[in-house]
Length: 336
Image (cartoon, rainbow, N blue to C red):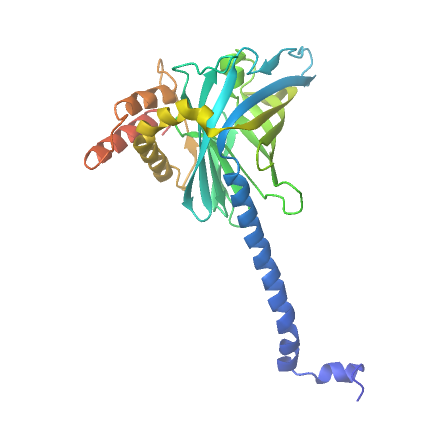
């Protein structure tokens, strides 16, 4: 019987067919494993390349009015107009699939001299590959848990508040086919501090973000294309579109000496703060904030706790006492 005849195909036993299919299956599995390994490695290397001492250029401007009767804000947010902003960014590898970037921000005058007392722990970035969940910002002071188990090969990026509390989180893959690694993601987020604090904006409270990070190895760029949203009883009302960038230009590490000196005596407390938040943000349910009447923002209260532990190593039982104080602040500002 000819091999190509229908009878020849029917004559092949299941064992023979399985033997023929096995190499193809193994090749497919190897290809999938290779893709996962490349995504993990490229993402990790790109994230670690974002560390060091940087001159940071934050620049944002509204490009389009989206609400009838709204006049586009002509001001340009330019953080370096009358000073220089620098950041010292360090990485803490928490596991083979999780890297946390911590930022210490401070000002220098236009001649380059640091402005004493301007150091502050800025936002942190918590990157995790293959995370099982993320906290999705859905409404003012409200984050819902999003299950990511069906999309295991993504990098989640969690941006935290000044006290390591939630701001926004997004999951996407790093590019594998570009000269420079880039990561793009769209998400919903609270109004940025640059707008509420520096620009004195109170006519909107949320932001639809489109973020693109490009890691050049030396310097790196974060592009944003955002929509400003007034989120209230009428739902989400877009008012304006903005475009902007955060451009990180690498400097010698010595230029971030004030940031390193500020961080050193606070390391133990910051580690405990991160561990405490990890125990709270365990993915079991939503997180809803509520600021008590007449109270300052939560980060102010957390800074007060931090000051009591500057320069201390936090052995037991002091560590447990500090942890309970951190948890107390978190619970005071959480809706139950």
